[in-house]
Length: 364
Ligand code: SAH
Image (cartoon, rainbow, N blue to C red; front, side, top):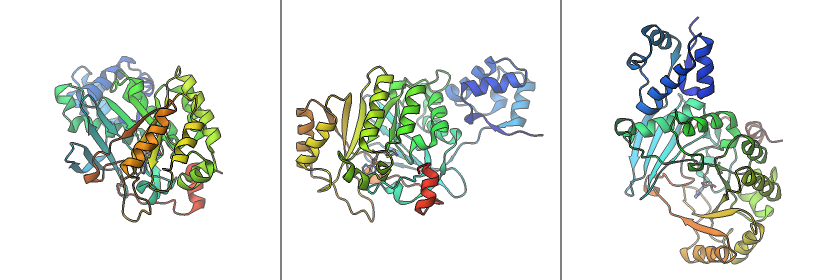
């Protein structure tokens, strides 16, 4: 019987099991991973340090399909966005943001999103499905290929952020396996700190992650009290701020006191008053926290607008004055709809009503 295993779905442990399961030496895993993730080679015929029999066996029994690139857009500021087909109904987006001393790749974890944050374009299109490990790591592989990494072996992507489409902690197993491949020396070899997972606040997921991983954590807070956060980030009704902050503290402790980044999108007249800033400073007092103020990126049909720069600066000054490291995140790639919250891909939602969204989020 022909078994088609996608090699991109296997982290190092699974790859070793695969080879030992067919009575091959476990180091075959290292050889294949180096071909795939260091050389960018997926054609078994070219893997010259494997025996001919093994190459033929792999060609017959495994596959290595990746998402296909539908389009690539390049912004005036150098940001690149790829639209990637993952199946007949769904396409996702991946964004590369070059900066002076680093290059950040923003990847997606789901086709669509079930959380329905009111200011997010991805949320508006509904939820289709979790991405597989191959579809997640495939975004990093494809971006590296497009950016010339395999040819030059000069690292262009220095950081990876799980801030694209979807809620990564609702696709926990696949996301953590893909993260292993991003940080594994036989994979892309990035330091844990250079990989950031951004969550809307799935408390059990944060706690689970704290037990198995040391990557950087970012949390989309956006409001300092439950009444407002319930409206902006509806998952707050299930996991309110107090529980969220307590999980973040545990995460910080588990990573040796690393700060958690709190993202706060500045919405004109909604969450940007001096009172809001003081309330935020109060709940984060003494917390190992950094705050990223995000400029709101509008999309068709949104009822929100950007806070002015003066308001944002005043808001930041209050937080900084309270001793909290706060930066205002620059908007990048908005001319190609590649900025935060603008990623939409093409999603065929299957979770239109609340009942189905609850199923998708696993929330009661
Ligand atoms: N689901 C995860 C990751 C995806 S969103 C999360 O919620 O963290 C990545 C970041 O972009 C989040 O902080 C999100 O709140 C923010 N965002 C969403 N829509 C936005 C918009 N229209 N403008 C600016 N930021 C937005």
